[in-house]
Image 1 (tube, rainbow, N blue to C red):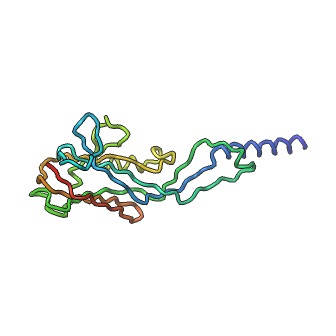
Image 2 (cartoon, helix red, strand yellow):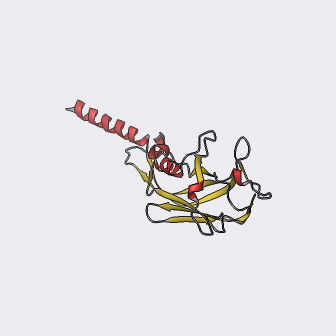
Image 3 (tube, one colour):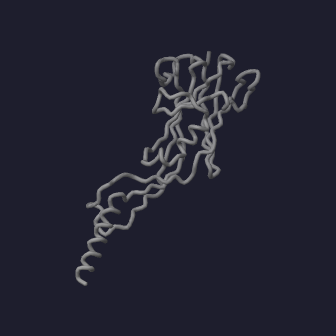
Length: 197
């Protein structure tokens, strides 16, 4: 009988050690995004310096989605947290991105007057892989929503959007980026006036 009790105690202690190895579970929500204008005319995309006219054949955005941790769940453990070791972080996002819409504030072309949705004129690429082929924007949305690509807490998810159309009217342009989330939230930002040629 004593042997069984000792076995049960040891098993419980071992179970608590295993549990303590992976204690952090993050509930996260996207609460905003930042963007930068990128120049894709060289070997690698670079951040626009803000001082020059932008080549419309090499124009794009780098989008950085911002995460906020709402809650960190600690699993039950029979040992002190200071004795626990971390095996990683489990991320649970409370909503998903559903779509991205890019609008032109000024007349873009004869086919796209002011306030037109010009999302179809952009292609996407995950920023971490600059050699990756361009993909539809929906592919990037699927990527950032996929839990297997977000198995650890990164604070941001970055991707690039490239203009693949050069019919835009040269001169002053301004764009609005809208990111729609599954809980009805719309994240929105506008660029400053830009000179495209």
